[in-house]
Amino acid sequence: YVDLGGSPVTGKDFHLPNVTTSGKDMTITTYSGCYWNDKLDEIYDDLDTGFTFTSAQEIGTKLYSRQCTLNVGAGKNVSFSEDDPDFCAQTNKMAYDWALKHAPAKSASRFQSKGVPFVFGADVQKAGGPLFLGARLQFTEKQQDGKNVMEVVSFKQATEQNYWEDHFHIPRPSAIPDPGCYHYCKLLSPARVMEWMLVDGLRTQDFEMELEAVLI
Image 1: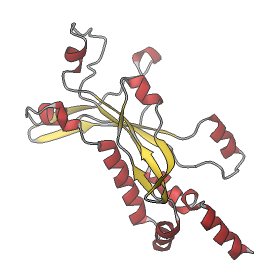
Image 2 (image 1 turned 90 degrees about the horizontal axis):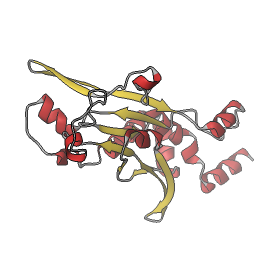
Image 3 (image 1 turned 180 degrees about the horizontal axis):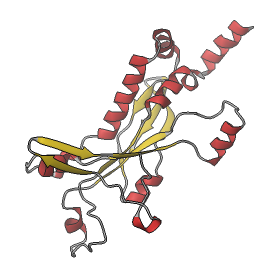
Image 4 (image 1 turned 30 degrees about the horizontal axis):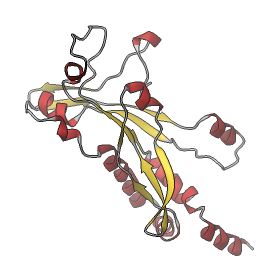
């Protein structure tokens, strides 16, 4: 875990993903940093109101691209289309499935029958590191097939292997790191999923009416 926005200007490293090989072994470095709440949510949390989450809103992650993993790491020659799939959404779905599997059985059953499920929209590309860093994992309640769902949309920044050459057409200054070979994602924290299943995802009108009737 690192400061994803670090740079030599701020006295920190860029923290850029890369691949190294040794014989048949391939090592890929990945960097992540969590984001919890904005200032208003922090006030709610300090007051212990129960109106905000205690888990991380997102895990911003700097991943090495699939194209460059195959080309640089495995010596192949594939195109940037290798990074077309919505890898961020796929990974977030895995976090959701993990939480469903590892939640207490009764809690998972209650959520599946009464809670608001997560669904996952297509990844949204951001054109530049600062824009990616400032874009938060998006949660939007909506209707799908007549039911309430919470749509989760991840922002990504994916760049092809020859990004500098293809976009700038001038030699890259040595002080500027190579902007190619990235596939950054805003990822869903399994802890956020678990918190949603046990608490906030059950705050539907029907469920609250049932709970009120039981308490009375």
